[in-house]
Image (cartoon, rainbow, N blue to C red; front, side, top):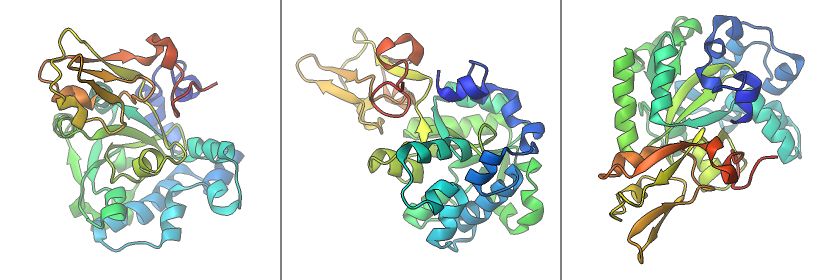
Amino acid sequence: MCEYCTKHGEGKKWYLQMKNYSDELLHQELSSIQKDLATTTTRIEWIHRFWENFEMPAITGIPKSRKELAVAALSSIELLKQQPSEEEIMEARKTVHFGQVLPIEDVEKVIDIVDSITRMPCGCRFMTTGKTDKRYCFGVGLDKWGIMGKYPDAASSLEVLSKEEAKKIFREYDEEGLIHSIWTAISPYVVGMCNCDRDCGAYKGYIEKGGLPQFFRAEYICQVDWDKCTGCKSCMSQCQFGAQFYSSGLSKVYINPTRCFGCGVCRAACPEGAITLVPRKKVPEIANVWLRDVPTK
């Protein structure tokens, strides 16, 4: 399992642990390391800063400066240190704001355990496309953060959803081929879930541009049952990680396990039900592949 499961989930999926959504964790005093890296004294303060500089522009259509956008999400290591090492940046990111890919099954499990879920405009889409009101982001526990009292103008752009409404929208995004991911606000506190493609800042920086990782792969990988695969290639248009390959000689699709992020969205496009999720830990060669294409030591 990923290192978050060891550190924050007692060996179980960290994002399915109620304590990582709790009021107690939200208001817990931060450690000195967390304060230094997040340049904040509380999670609430960090969430409000993120909201003001990242979410509000997507709601109002008024962009923030590059510096303000950076301050919203990056750590002091990345902002202030001239030449931080990759190890320093990664440790800072994992401490402050990091994500993990989830298949639709685990998205629905998260929805089942949270108190509330609110759909909101996506800051990433506003930054990368300039378009407002693209509602791909879902905050969990928004009512606890005092957002409405501080940002009353945002209310009309937010949708408080029932659990079934949220699941329906996520399933639609799954069929579209959007990658589901879950994110922290000073780890391991869970701040929300997103639906990502190349217009997502984290995806663009990490996958498209080959930068440092910003999210873990899922706890699973996808595999193709060649007895069912007809070689129609429908699934290949869904994969955003370049993990699927076609054999013209065999007329079958193959999924490279070292490239697969386990998002599972390729399954929605397969008319034969030939693709299944397999726990990553059951495939020795990639059991510890979480960030790059080689095992994490």
